[in-house]
Length: 252
Image 1 (cartoon, rainbow, N blue to C red):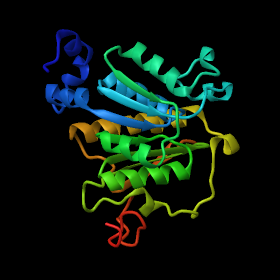
Image 2: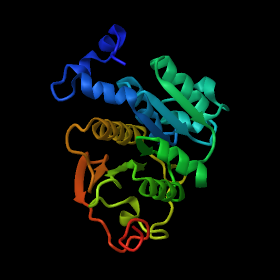
Image 3: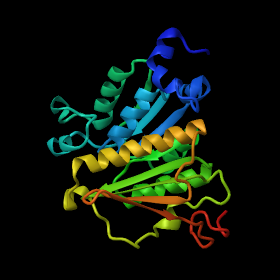
Image 4: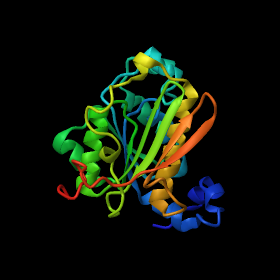
């Protein structure tokens, strides 16, 4: 359906961009994005995708809001302590953009449920905080050929990459990280500076919009590394690993 006057006004600042226009906005309005995690990364991702006009956001997170979350998880308020994060997120996002459809899943997606949600999405944003979830989400994206925007943040550092299983030369997350190759590190144990998750989450939203609209060059095949303490970034080239246990030639 064509956009109404209210929508044209709401999204006018990005519609004005020559590379964007009404066609790109229509793509966002029709898009369905799965966000895995409603914490430090998921908060800016969800807020910017909602503000930008992504039509349907599916948010999955089994946790409840804790006072220690409020330092960086900007979807949630003091009054949300004890509520499920997805209920808090749904309320915040629909207050920001009432036209948005938010599907709140207060569960850790696994197995068939994960596969179904990934298959139904146009794009998946991994905003989780553990390798088990990242590996499972990656495997589901590879199996369904669904684009994945992956981010991570800890201490003063962050990482960001885009994986496109629908493109033959794209690596997947397991080409970068092998199971058991890195010790699990969490913000609860190591700490994180609040703006770091804000920066990485915002960049995840940017990459998601670029994938959904086809505008610009994404980080597919590249890994962005942020050193927030010294405000330095590096971009490394990633190659598909033919021996990868998920997307390698023997598993394709």
